[in-house]
Length: 335
View (cartoon, rainbow, N blue to C red):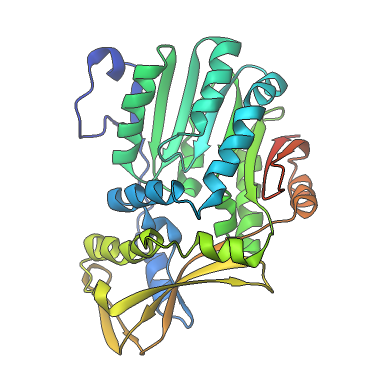
Protein backbone atom coordinates (compact mmCIF):
# COMPACT_ATOMS: atom_id res chain seq x y z
CA UNK A 1 0.00 0.00 0.00
CA UNK A 2 1.55 3.31 -1.08
CA UNK A 3 0.80 6.12 1.33
CA UNK A 4 2.20 9.60 1.71
CA UNK A 5 1.76 10.20 5.42
CA UNK A 6 -0.69 12.92 6.36
CA UNK A 7 0.71 15.89 8.23
CA UNK A 8 2.97 18.78 7.31
CA UNK A 9 2.78 19.33 3.52
CA UNK A 10 5.84 18.49 1.48
CA UNK A 11 7.08 20.63 -1.36
CA UNK A 12 7.03 18.73 -4.66
CA UNK A 13 10.80 18.60 -5.02
CA UNK A 14 10.92 16.78 -1.67
CA UNK A 15 7.78 14.68 -2.07
CA UNK A 16 8.90 13.02 -5.29
CA UNK A 17 11.88 11.62 -3.38
CA UNK A 18 9.77 10.24 -0.54
CA UNK A 19 7.22 7.50 -0.07
CA UNK A 20 5.93 5.76 3.01
CA UNK A 21 4.34 2.32 3.00
CA UNK A 22 2.08 1.50 5.93
CA UNK A 23 2.76 -2.10 6.90
CA UNK A 24 -0.49 -3.43 8.42
CA UNK A 25 -0.56 -5.74 11.40
CA UNK A 26 -1.90 -9.15 10.26
CA UNK A 27 -5.60 -9.69 10.93
CA UNK A 28 -6.22 -11.13 14.38
CA UNK A 29 -2.86 -10.06 15.81
CA UNK A 30 -3.72 -6.47 16.77
CA UNK A 31 -3.54 -6.29 20.54
CA UNK A 32 -2.89 -10.01 20.99
CA UNK A 33 0.47 -9.33 22.62
CA UNK A 34 -1.17 -6.86 25.02
CA UNK A 35 -3.75 -9.46 26.06
CA UNK A 36 -1.06 -12.08 26.51
CA UNK A 37 1.12 -9.78 28.61
CA UNK A 38 -1.61 -8.45 30.91
CA UNK A 39 -3.28 -11.80 31.62
CA UNK A 40 -0.21 -13.43 33.13
CA UNK A 41 1.86 -12.82 36.24
CA UNK A 42 4.21 -11.09 36.30
CA UNK A 43 2.46 -8.78 33.84
CA UNK A 44 4.28 -7.31 30.84
CA UNK A 45 3.67 -4.98 27.91
CA UNK A 46 5.44 -4.91 24.52
CA UNK A 47 7.88 -2.00 24.53
CA UNK A 48 7.01 -0.82 21.00
CA UNK A 49 3.79 0.65 22.46
CA UNK A 50 6.00 3.38 23.93
CA UNK A 51 6.29 4.99 20.53
CA UNK A 52 3.27 7.03 19.65
CA UNK A 53 4.03 10.65 18.72
CA UNK A 54 4.34 11.74 22.36
CA UNK A 55 6.45 8.73 23.25
CA UNK A 56 8.83 9.40 20.36
CA UNK A 57 9.18 13.03 21.49
CA UNK A 58 9.93 11.96 25.06
CA UNK A 59 12.53 9.45 23.90
CA UNK A 60 14.29 12.18 21.94
CA UNK A 61 14.41 14.17 25.18
CA UNK A 62 15.83 11.16 27.01
CA UNK A 63 18.65 10.92 24.47
CA UNK A 64 19.77 14.44 25.48
CA UNK A 65 19.76 13.85 29.25
CA UNK A 66 23.11 14.02 31.06
CA UNK A 67 22.51 10.65 32.74
CA UNK A 68 21.65 8.87 29.50
CA UNK A 69 25.07 7.95 28.08
CA UNK A 70 24.11 5.45 25.29
CA UNK A 71 23.12 7.96 22.61
CA UNK A 72 26.09 10.31 22.89
CA UNK A 73 28.55 7.42 23.35
CA UNK A 74 27.31 5.56 20.29
CA UNK A 75 27.20 8.79 18.29
CA UNK A 76 30.82 9.54 19.16
CA UNK A 77 31.88 6.07 18.00
CA UNK A 78 29.87 6.42 14.80
CA UNK A 79 31.33 9.86 14.02
CA UNK A 80 34.77 8.28 13.91
CA UNK A 81 33.80 4.96 12.32
CA UNK A 82 31.32 6.04 9.59
CA UNK A 83 33.89 6.58 6.78
CA UNK A 84 35.47 3.20 7.51
CA UNK A 85 32.07 1.49 7.60
CA UNK A 86 31.24 2.91 4.17
CA UNK A 87 34.63 1.86 2.80
CA UNK A 88 34.21 -1.69 4.16
CA UNK A 89 30.72 -2.23 2.74
CA UNK A 90 31.10 -0.32 -0.51
CA UNK A 91 28.07 1.33 -2.18
CA UNK A 92 24.77 0.16 -0.73
CA UNK A 93 21.26 1.11 0.34
CA UNK A 94 20.74 1.87 4.02
CA UNK A 95 17.92 0.15 5.93
CA UNK A 96 17.36 1.21 9.54
CA UNK A 97 15.22 -0.42 12.20
CA UNK A 98 13.74 2.00 14.74
CA UNK A 99 14.99 5.03 12.85
CA UNK A 100 13.39 7.71 15.06
CA UNK A 101 14.92 11.11 14.30
CA UNK A 102 17.82 9.48 12.36
CA UNK A 103 20.26 11.83 14.08
CA UNK A 104 23.06 9.23 14.23
CA UNK A 105 22.21 7.97 10.76
CA UNK A 106 23.23 11.35 9.35
CA UNK A 107 26.84 10.39 10.05
CA UNK A 108 26.42 7.37 7.81
CA UNK A 109 24.52 9.34 5.17
CA UNK A 110 27.43 11.80 5.04
CA UNK A 111 29.90 8.97 4.48
CA UNK A 112 27.83 7.13 1.87
CA UNK A 113 26.93 10.32 0.00
CA UNK A 114 30.62 10.97 -0.50
CA UNK A 115 31.20 7.37 -1.53
CA UNK A 116 28.36 6.85 -4.01
CA UNK A 117 26.55 10.13 -4.69
CA UNK A 118 22.84 9.29 -4.63
CA UNK A 119 21.65 7.24 -1.69
CA UNK A 120 18.49 5.31 -0.84
CA UNK A 121 17.46 5.22 2.81
CA UNK A 122 14.74 2.87 4.10
CA UNK A 123 13.79 3.90 7.66
CA UNK A 124 11.48 1.60 9.62
CA UNK A 125 9.56 2.99 12.59
CA UNK A 126 6.16 2.56 14.23
CA UNK A 127 5.55 6.32 14.28
CA UNK A 128 4.38 7.65 10.91
CA UNK A 129 4.61 11.21 12.24
CA UNK A 130 8.25 10.75 13.19
CA UNK A 131 9.00 9.19 9.80
CA UNK A 132 7.60 12.15 7.88
CA UNK A 133 9.06 14.82 10.15
CA UNK A 134 12.50 13.24 9.87
CA UNK A 135 12.16 12.78 6.11
CA UNK A 136 11.40 16.47 5.65
CA UNK A 137 14.66 17.44 7.30
CA UNK A 138 16.77 14.75 5.64
CA UNK A 139 15.51 15.42 2.12
CA UNK A 140 16.17 19.13 2.53
CA UNK A 141 19.73 18.48 3.73
CA UNK A 142 20.66 15.70 1.28
CA UNK A 143 19.73 16.63 -2.33
CA UNK A 144 20.65 13.18 -3.68
CA UNK A 145 18.75 11.22 -1.05
CA UNK A 146 15.70 9.04 -1.76
CA UNK A 147 13.61 7.78 1.16
CA UNK A 148 11.27 4.80 1.11
CA UNK A 149 9.89 4.61 4.65
CA UNK A 150 8.09 1.64 6.17
CA UNK A 151 5.69 2.36 9.03
CA UNK A 152 5.24 -0.71 11.21
CA UNK A 153 6.89 -3.11 13.62
CA UNK A 154 10.24 -4.63 12.68
CA UNK A 155 9.10 -8.20 12.25
CA UNK A 156 6.45 -7.34 9.68
CA UNK A 157 8.28 -4.48 7.98
CA UNK A 158 11.34 -6.62 7.22
CA UNK A 159 9.09 -8.80 5.08
CA UNK A 160 8.16 -5.74 2.98
CA UNK A 161 11.60 -4.40 2.07
CA UNK A 162 11.54 -2.98 -1.47
CA UNK A 163 13.74 -4.63 -4.12
CA UNK A 164 17.18 -3.12 -4.60
CA UNK A 165 19.86 -3.24 -7.27
CA UNK A 166 22.49 -2.45 -4.65
CA UNK A 167 23.77 -4.34 -1.65
CA UNK A 168 22.23 -3.41 1.69
CA UNK A 169 23.48 -2.23 5.06
CA UNK A 170 20.86 -3.01 7.69
CA UNK A 171 21.32 -0.72 10.70
CA UNK A 172 20.13 -1.43 14.24
CA UNK A 173 21.50 1.18 16.63
CA UNK A 174 20.86 2.27 20.21
CA UNK A 175 21.27 -1.25 21.66
CA UNK A 176 17.58 -1.77 20.95
CA UNK A 177 18.41 -5.46 20.58
CA UNK A 178 18.69 -5.38 24.37
CA UNK A 179 14.89 -5.03 24.57
CA UNK A 180 14.61 -8.63 23.40
CA UNK A 181 14.86 -11.71 25.59
CA UNK A 182 17.59 -14.21 24.65
CA UNK A 183 14.99 -16.36 22.86
CA UNK A 184 13.54 -13.36 21.01
CA UNK A 185 17.05 -12.24 20.11
CA UNK A 186 17.74 -15.57 18.41
CA UNK A 187 14.50 -15.33 16.42
CA UNK A 188 15.29 -11.74 15.48
CA UNK A 189 18.82 -12.54 14.23
CA UNK A 190 17.38 -15.38 12.17
CA UNK A 191 15.01 -12.88 10.54
CA UNK A 192 17.88 -10.45 9.91
CA UNK A 193 19.77 -13.24 8.18
CA UNK A 194 16.78 -14.08 5.97
CA UNK A 195 16.20 -10.39 5.14
CA UNK A 196 19.71 -9.96 3.75
CA UNK A 197 21.45 -11.43 0.72
CA UNK A 198 24.95 -12.94 0.84
CA UNK A 199 27.45 -10.10 1.02
CA UNK A 200 25.01 -7.64 2.63
CA UNK A 201 26.02 -6.08 5.94
CA UNK A 202 24.44 -5.64 9.37
CA UNK A 203 25.54 -2.83 11.71
CA UNK A 204 24.60 -3.46 15.34
CA UNK A 205 24.99 -1.14 18.33
CA UNK A 206 25.17 -2.80 21.76
CA UNK A 207 25.34 -1.36 25.27
CA UNK A 208 27.97 -3.13 27.35
CA UNK A 209 28.05 -4.31 30.97
CA UNK A 210 29.38 -1.62 33.31
CA UNK A 211 29.13 -0.07 36.76
CA UNK A 212 25.64 -0.54 38.23
CA UNK A 213 25.41 3.10 39.34
CA UNK A 214 25.96 4.36 35.80
CA UNK A 215 23.29 1.99 34.50
CA UNK A 216 20.72 2.80 37.19
CA UNK A 217 21.09 6.56 36.79
CA UNK A 218 20.52 6.33 33.03
CA UNK A 219 16.99 4.98 33.59
CA UNK A 220 16.10 7.13 36.62
CA UNK A 221 16.96 10.62 35.45
CA UNK A 222 16.63 13.56 37.82
CA UNK A 223 14.20 15.42 35.53
CA UNK A 224 11.69 12.56 35.44
CA UNK A 225 11.63 12.31 31.65
CA UNK A 226 12.11 8.53 31.67
CA UNK A 227 9.27 8.20 34.17
CA UNK A 228 7.01 10.24 31.87
CA UNK A 229 8.09 8.08 28.92
CA UNK A 230 7.28 4.92 30.86
CA UNK A 231 3.84 6.17 31.93
CA UNK A 232 3.03 7.32 28.40
CA UNK A 233 2.69 3.69 27.32
CA UNK A 234 -0.56 3.59 29.32
CA UNK A 235 -1.86 6.71 27.60
CA UNK A 236 -1.07 5.15 24.24
CA UNK A 237 -2.91 1.94 25.15
CA UNK A 238 -5.92 3.98 26.27
CA UNK A 239 -5.97 5.63 22.85
CA UNK A 240 -5.43 2.43 20.86
CA UNK A 241 -7.89 0.18 22.68
CA UNK A 242 -10.32 2.45 24.60
CA UNK A 243 -8.62 1.77 27.91
CA UNK A 244 -9.15 3.19 31.39
CA UNK A 245 -5.58 3.31 32.68
CA UNK A 246 -5.25 6.23 35.11
CA UNK A 247 -1.63 7.39 35.01
CA UNK A 248 -1.72 8.90 38.50
CA UNK A 249 -2.36 5.42 39.90
CA UNK A 250 1.05 4.17 38.73
CA UNK A 251 4.65 5.05 39.40
CA UNK A 252 7.88 4.43 37.48
CA UNK A 253 10.39 1.84 38.77
CA UNK A 254 13.65 0.91 37.03
CA UNK A 255 16.47 -1.23 38.44
CA UNK A 256 19.40 -3.35 37.30
CA UNK A 257 19.00 -7.12 37.50
CA UNK A 258 22.60 -8.20 38.10
CA UNK A 259 21.91 -11.89 37.56
CA UNK A 260 20.41 -11.36 34.08
CA UNK A 261 22.59 -8.33 33.20
CA UNK A 262 19.57 -6.22 32.32
CA UNK A 263 17.79 -3.05 33.30
CA UNK A 264 14.11 -3.72 34.01
CA UNK A 265 11.57 -0.95 33.70
CA UNK A 266 8.22 -1.41 35.45
CA UNK A 267 5.06 0.48 36.26
CA UNK A 268 3.91 -0.11 39.85
CA UNK A 269 0.20 -0.06 40.65
CA UNK A 270 -0.29 2.21 43.67
CA UNK A 271 -3.63 0.62 44.62
CA UNK A 272 -5.98 -2.18 43.70
CA UNK A 273 -7.63 -1.39 40.37
CA UNK A 274 -9.54 -3.00 37.53
CA UNK A 275 -8.20 -2.28 34.06
CA UNK A 276 -10.37 -2.46 30.97
CA UNK A 277 -9.38 -2.30 27.31
CA UNK A 278 -12.78 -2.28 25.66
CA UNK A 279 -11.65 -2.81 22.06
CA UNK A 280 -9.84 -5.97 23.15
CA UNK A 281 -12.66 -7.20 25.39
CA UNK A 282 -10.12 -7.34 28.20
CA UNK A 283 -10.59 -6.81 31.93
CA UNK A 284 -7.80 -7.52 34.41
CA UNK A 285 -7.25 -6.94 38.13
CA UNK A 286 -4.13 -5.23 39.41
CA UNK A 287 -3.19 -5.62 43.07
CA UNK A 288 -1.62 -2.78 45.04
CA UNK A 289 2.16 -2.78 44.39
CA UNK A 290 1.78 -5.26 41.52
CA UNK A 291 3.99 -4.31 38.59
CA UNK A 292 3.74 -4.30 34.82
CA UNK A 293 7.14 -4.75 33.20
CA UNK A 294 7.29 -2.45 30.19
CA UNK A 295 10.87 -2.97 29.04
CA UNK A 296 14.09 -4.85 29.54
CA UNK A 297 17.43 -3.47 28.39
CA UNK A 298 20.05 -6.19 28.38
CA UNK A 299 23.72 -5.27 28.64
CA UNK A 300 26.17 -7.28 26.58
CA UNK A 301 29.62 -8.79 26.41
CA UNK A 302 31.24 -8.15 22.99
CA UNK A 303 32.84 -11.59 22.71
CA UNK A 304 29.62 -13.42 23.52
CA UNK A 305 27.60 -11.25 21.15
CA UNK A 306 30.09 -11.90 18.33
CA UNK A 307 29.68 -15.65 18.89
CA UNK A 308 25.89 -15.29 18.78
CA UNK A 309 26.04 -13.36 15.51
CA UNK A 310 28.40 -15.91 13.99
CA UNK A 311 26.01 -18.72 14.93
CA UNK A 312 23.30 -16.94 12.91
CA UNK A 313 25.38 -16.54 9.74
CA UNK A 314 26.36 -12.94 10.51
CA UNK A 315 30.09 -13.09 11.33
CA UNK A 316 31.59 -9.89 12.74
CA UNK A 317 34.00 -8.08 10.41
CA UNK A 318 34.97 -5.16 12.63
CA UNK A 319 34.26 -3.83 16.15
CA UNK A 320 34.48 -0.22 17.35
CA UNK A 321 34.30 0.81 21.03
CA UNK A 322 34.62 4.01 23.05
CA UNK A 323 37.58 4.54 25.37
CA UNK A 324 35.61 3.49 28.46
CA UNK A 325 34.29 0.38 26.69
CA UNK A 326 30.73 1.34 27.56
CA UNK A 327 29.33 0.76 24.07
CA UNK A 328 30.24 -1.09 20.88
CA UNK A 329 29.40 -1.08 17.18
CA UNK A 330 29.69 -4.40 15.36
CA UNK A 331 29.79 -4.64 11.58
CA UNK A 332 28.69 -8.06 10.34
CA UNK A 333 28.59 -9.58 6.86
CA UNK A 334 25.88 -12.02 5.84
CA UNK A 335 27.44 -15.26 4.58
